[in-house]
Length: 473
Image (cartoon, rainbow, N blue to C red; front, top):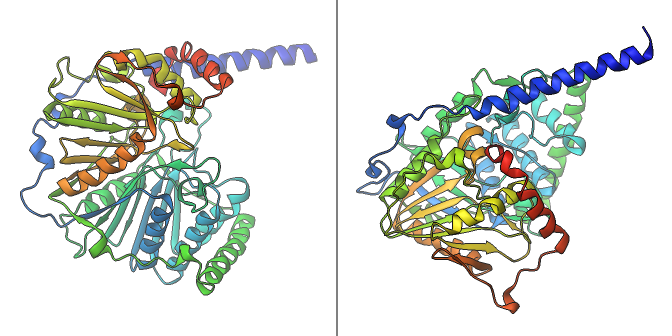
């Protein structure tokens, strides 16, 4: 067999594999599932309560304070820590939080960590940290949907949740992963403004939303799509050394009284009472999921009659998800949407999808703002009629609606709704109004966004192409 024949054979194999991927990872996803009307929440009172619930909440708008809250939760743990995250990135905050987790495990706390199997982030310089977690006797590490070369349809099934629960007493959910770009006090160049919510169940009542969150994580943990992190003998040895390194770094920070490892949060006094806190999530399934979170958010919106305030880093209302929106939404509600701008977005593909659909968004009559200051927005939230609030990992796009695991809490409480509204309005004050009442608005010259010509041109060009795969962004 000549070299030419070998090359030709390889090219044929690659072509066949490409066609296989095209069919199983693209074409099959254009066959959506039928609607399940019974899954809609037709009675919004499901999310409302008449008296104070067992759950209190704390809005975490500041990234550094959100890191402190996580540290306090880990240090307070007595029995269990359950973590489900899309990714863990680099930074001093990451190393100190991992050190705190190892310290908790050393004192007998059972720790379970579930990460997305492709985007988990513990690679390169963080590889040994992964070994450390997997090699500790009181820590279990698992991955959700690892990369499978011959199952391309699984590539879209990403774990996008950001949840941690401690002892059935504390829970946190929101948009932040663990990394300096979310939690550092000195903001790196890729820093993002995000949002989390702490849930505090002082008496560890069984009707707390934290129980629902933990049950969901149990389902993910034990699901066939989830696999254990198995290490070789060499990796185990590296893990043991990495445990010593992370433990020493954490101990030194404690001894030198580094602020990040010495939080002092009083959960009782810092949290706000609620009437009810509910947990919603997408189903755990491959291919197109039933869009439970999206349809629930829309169903609540159809009942709102005063105002709907939305913040999402990505707004891509493609046909794949808009078919779940009723033709006649409540016209009395005042809609406001805040998202990123050309200048602030770090995600060229997602933003190009938004640019291609911006005209259709404007035609709905919403008040549309684009963030125009340094860094970018990553928080995902909705406020309905200044009473119900939704906070979690869900972006307003097809990927969050149909492909990823996603989760949110729906909070009934006017005090919390006012706090969340104030936080979103703070970002709106740093944004540019680009459309209102079905009309674009040309900003004054002194308010025009600082955007590079190259980036703007690239994103607008991409918007002409991403029309073909909006259901995947």
